Length: 262
Image 1 (tube, rainbow, N blue to C red):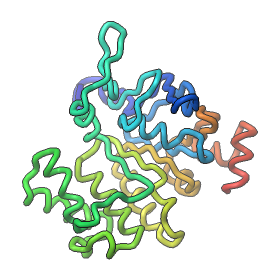
Image 2: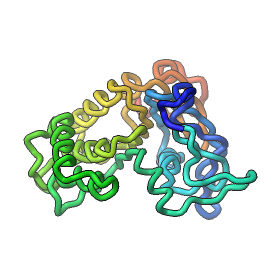
Image 3: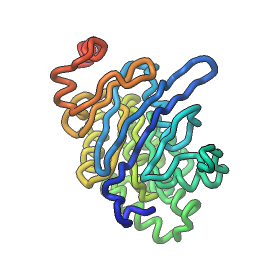
């Protein structure tokens, strides 16, 4: 189904049903179930090692789940189901799904030998077959959108960390994703550069983009988030409206965590 079909508006953009993931004997995710509605910004917080980033990577099949099911826009991620059995998609099929999901990592992962403009043009041209002229026009628009219109010809080494991360966001947007995933996008930045990246993310949320954001920025979660999820030990300890969870956490583990970060 597509977003234009009847019933699409009522369908969550992300739905996790009892998702589990292990690395050897280490169970990182333990039967995670949640929903992210269309246009919603979900912020995921928790201590290091709680499973936040692993869950994010499972959403676009960068990690393979060991149990449960993950759906994006009603489509089972990474698998096809037949007679109640799951069969993992071929790499090309998984890549087709993944191109509808933008992901911004903690480290920028820009191609160092390409300019900001070329970094943004590369995926639309190679994956979607967009012409160089169209990809370039779109890339210029996106650079202007993230406040870097004058840096199109700059290489990553000529940009600050905050500027590089904004190029990474523009690069993800160039694929016209239906969902954006952010994995601690500001944690590698100097403190004075964090705000410029968060401003771009605020603007993106304002357009109605569905976003799942793993973050330590509690102010951003409170201001922009529609839902706050606190994870610890591979489980969801508490979730709800960010203002409520941050002001009045119900679980002792949440209270202990927030007392150290607020």
